[in-house]
Amino acid sequence: GVRNVLILAGNDWNRTVRPTDMIRAASDCGLYVGAVLNTSTPDRAAEIKLAGRKISYGASFFLTQPVWSYETVQEFHSALDRNGIDAELYWGLFAAHDFNRVSRIGMDGIRVPDYVVAKSMNGSSGTKISRELLDDFRSRGENVYLMGRRYDTGEYKRYSLKEFFECAGRSRI
Image (cartoon, rainbow, N blue to C red; front, side, top):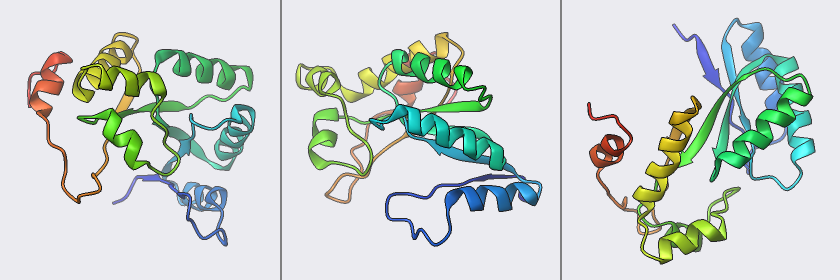
C-alpha cells in the first residue's frame, strides 16, 4: 500500500484546505510525508519558519524548487540548522536543453538566474550546466531530483539523458 506522500499545493491551490492540514492528515494516517521548500523566495526567513511548521505537522522530507548553486544549499542548511529543523532534503535540479529559452517562456515560482541564462547564451548547453551542478551536488553528498519543463510548443526539447548521466558518472541507463 501507500507509504509515502508528497504534499504539493502550487500557486493556484484552492486555499480552503491548507497544505499544513494535508500534511497533518497524511502524517496521522502513518504516512511518511514530504513537503516543498521554496528556495526562490525573497523572504527566506518566512520560508524557514514555514518549514518548521510543516515539520511540526508531520513532514519528514522536503523537495525544493530548483537550486542554481551550492551556495544556496549551504545557506538553507545553515538556516535550517539555526532553527533546529532536521529533515531530509532533495534539491531540485532543473534539466533543460536551453536555459535562455526556459527563462523567456517563464514558469510559476521558478526564475532562471541571469548568470545561468548568460552561460546558456554564451554557448554552454543547458545539459552541460545541469551536469556541472549534478556533479557538484553529488561530490558533496546531497540528494537531488530532476525537474523539467514542457516547452510552449507542447513538445519536449530532447537531449540525451544517457549522456547526462554518463557525464555524471552514472553510465547504467
